[in-house]
Image (cartoon, rainbow, N blue to C red; front, side, top):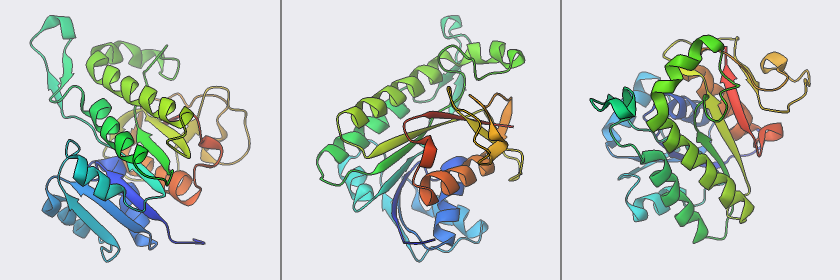
Length: 249
């Protein structure tokens, strides 16, 4: 690592952002994380043997503007991994799957972008979204019926992505990276991860050397977090800036 960065984490008790936080703390970056239950985050970090001397935890939630602003203080990179808990709806019009909070991603990124508009520093922003948006060309055929059940969470993720792209166009951000993992698992970190985006040419630069989108069924939260750490934190976005990057096995 050439220099210490100031990183802001939202949704750090979730698997992908948590693993990116663990790697970032391990190499000495200064990290600030928003947490509704700070003790939960400390427990998770302790279990992973992650150092915490460079961590500041801001108590609060994504709907508290002052807590969001405090989390963003001095941040040069923002990792946004907020998400809602899945819930099955009894309403057949929602086709099985909804969220305990169906607008959490869109509402949360709105709070973050509002706070960024009030400050001069323009960070790199990484948001964790999902495959299966748009024309579903990043999904294997066998997975497409399953993803039809995810209309509610997908609308929330799509709204989040649109707000981030617009904010970058308005100069609120330095740049963005939208991370679109396949169906998430709790598996171990592997060497199988592939990364790509629509229009990408093969570069020989690693991550499976994918041309175009990476199409696959699953990916582990540990691999996604490690990719975010390597490419967004350490690599400052690299070739992935301005793209929706699919991650899959």
